[in-house]
Image 1 (cartoon, one colour):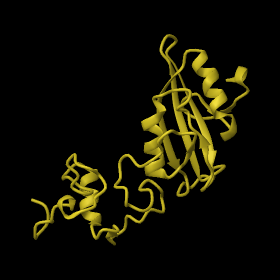
Image 2 (image 1 turned 135 degrees about the vertical axis):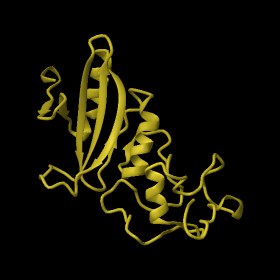
Image 3 (image 1 turned 180 degrees about the vertical axis):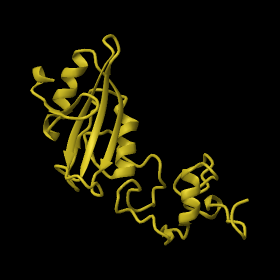
Length: 189
């Protein structure tokens, strides 16, 4: 890490704090040394009790297969800040960055196709943000569908289909043929 001029974060695994504007250059240097991108996650620290430098972090997990070394690259961001896409360095970043954008709302500059990948296109907000409304009020979509909180929670735990009843069709949720199933009276069976 020191050879790349990175600040070490005192975490359980080797973690380097990278400035958003330096991320792509650091990733390219690591790729040239044999590291591969394994995962990318977005974190919202707004509800943490310990103070953090900024509200969000993007954490890239890189791994060197020959040396069996793992390194995490952490980029701190505030709401509305962007970070460079690692797609030009590692093609594996494509889906990973789309997932972080969809669920946490962190935009990746230079991504070739940054759009939602897991949630319906017309769902407003980002479900992994601490301020996303997952209370007892249903979330209403523009086409009249709604997300029932109890059903959503059950879907997260694997007890039923959950979110929208998506079964592999187009995900836009527009049109009566793609509305979610009606909840049977008395709840799921």
